[in-house]
Image (cartoon, rainbow, N blue to C red; front, side):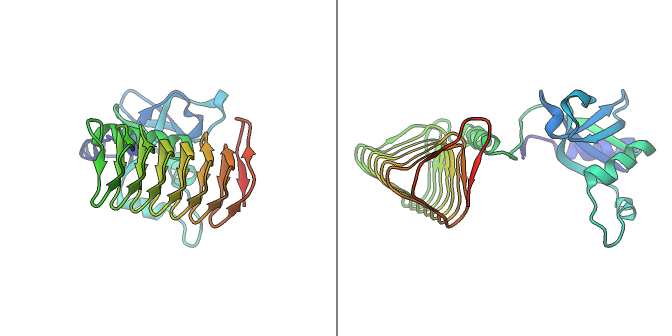
Length: 261
C-alpha cells in the first residue's frame, strides 16, 4: 500500500475519541475487495465486514491498512491461536463501541494485484521523476537509446542503442536492456537481462531473470526471479514462478491468469 495518510492525524483522532483501536479509512469505488466499515456521525465504526459480497457492502469506506491500537488489544488475542485483526478483533471491538475510524483523502493505492503494483509504480514515478529521468550511479546509455520520463534507472543499468525505456518504467540496479528493446509501464528488478528487440509492457520482471530475443511480456505478467524465457516467446496474463525456463508462448484471455510452475 502507498498512501498520503497522516499518521499524526490518525493518532490525534484515536486519543480524542478514547478508542481502543482506530483505523485509517479511504473511500473507494469497489469496496468488496477490502475490509468495509459502517461509520456513524461521531466516527465510531458500527460494523466491520471483511471482504463482503458486492451486494452486502455497508459502504464505500474501507480499511486503508493503517491502525492505532491500544495495548489492551493484546488481551483479545488467544495464546497459540491464529488470530486475524480483520476477522477476529475488529468486529468484536465494533460490537463493544470501541472501534473508531478516521477518513482520509488523497493518494491511496493498494498493491495487492499486479495491476495495482504497476499503477503504484507509475504514481511514484510521477512524484520523483516527472521532469527528468532519475538515474543512479554508473548508468550506461548508448547513442540512439531513448528515455521517456517518468522513469527511474538504478545503479549500473545499461541501455543499449535503439532501446526505448519509458514512460512509467523502473529499472533495478545492474539490469541490462539490449538494443531495440522497449520497456513501458513496467518494473524490472535488479540484474535482469532483456535481450534485443523484445518488449516488456504492463508487466513485472523479477531479479536476475533472462529474457531472450524477440520476447514479448505483456498485460499484467509477473516473471519470477531467475526465470529464463527463450527467444520468440510471447506471454500475456501469465505468472511465471521463480527459476523456471519458458520455451513456448502462453496467452491467457483477460478473465484470469495462467500460472507457469
